[in-house]
Length: 246
Image 1: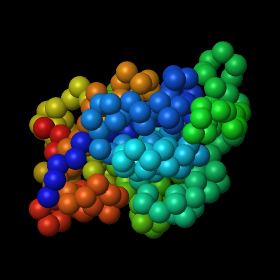
Image 2 (image 1 turned 90 degrees about the vertical axis):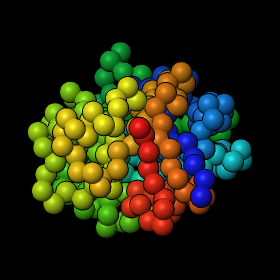
Image 3 (image 1 turned 45 degrees about the horizontal axis):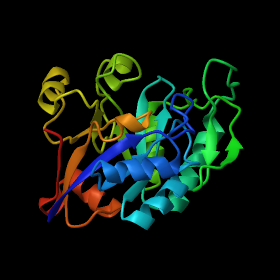
C-alpha cells in the first residue's frame, strides 16, 4: 500500500470563473511541480475539457480523474467522478438535457473555452454553464450512481452553494461517496460542526481557479495504485485503503 496526494476539484478555462491561464497543459505541469499524484478536472456542468487533460497527464505519470461540478436545482454544487469515458459522455448528455440555456453576458464573466494540448482554442461555449440543472440533488445523485460514478457534495461548509447552506441538512437517503471540504478547513471541525457521520469520508481540495491555487488543498489516499478503481475502494475503506485529510 502506498500514500498518494490528490487534489480532486480543479477548474480549467472552460469554467467562466477560472483564470485564462488554466489550460490543460499548464494544469498538468503545475500539478506535477506541486507533488500531486492524482487530480480531477471538475468544470461547471461540463466534461468537455476532461479527456485532453487526462491524455496530457498520462504522458507525465499524473493520474487524471474525469469529473464535473454539477449544480443542482437547489443550487448545491456537487462533484461527480467517472472511470469510463462512455459513462462520462452519458452523464454529459444528462446534463445537456436538463441545463437551462442562458447567455454568457459580455463583461460579467471570462470566456468558456475548450482548449487543446497546445493551448489552442477549439471551441467557445456561449451559454452560461454555471447554472442549476432542472433536477434535484436526489435525482442527480441517482443518475451518477446509475452510471457507476462517484457522488460527492462539494465544499459542504461554504455559505453559498454548499450542501448545508442550501439545504440545512444531509437529506435522508442521499447516497454520498464522500463530502468535499475547502482547503482552509479542518476535517475534525467540519465533521463536528455538521455532525457528519464518522463513516463518510471527507475530501479536502483546492477548488483551484488559478495555477497558484493548485495543490493548496489535497487529500491523501492510501491505495495499492493510483487509479480510479483504487480511489473508489479507498472511499469505501476496502482492504486497508483509506482517505485522509487531517
